[in-house]
Image 1: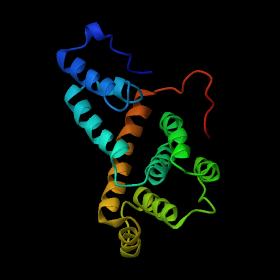
Image 2: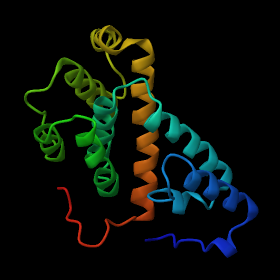
Image 3: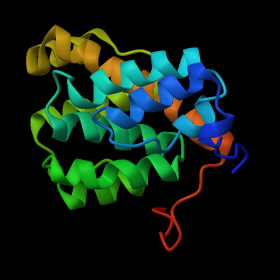
Length: 180
């Protein structure tokens, strides 16, 4: 890891406040990108608030939200993000076969229409940096305007998270194998 954990006694008041907010919130602990992000407590506070909404209060079904996160993790080769979210995706109802295909950078077979939308939308955003009119209209028809915006938000937020994880070189926990 490029950024060592900051011992609580060496944290500034601002760092301690944000740390406590994260640990006391629905995440239940400070993991992943947050140890690195704490170098900028104001940014960390904003990031964690956005992430809390996108992870726990998004209008997207958990299966779709977590699928978008896995697509993002694979796009950025963020192994820690994948490690953290694959179990949540499976718990949310995503099938193992879809997760396996995503890990192999393949279009999954047997997707439901809303999963096909999430896949197509996220892949278009990452590869083309936009979505065409037909894909946008399909998105609104399947998940609504709020769902489309939440899907964009998840993609953007987890891009930031992946970048932090990759720059900080956050390792997989001991004994965990690379997902790809």
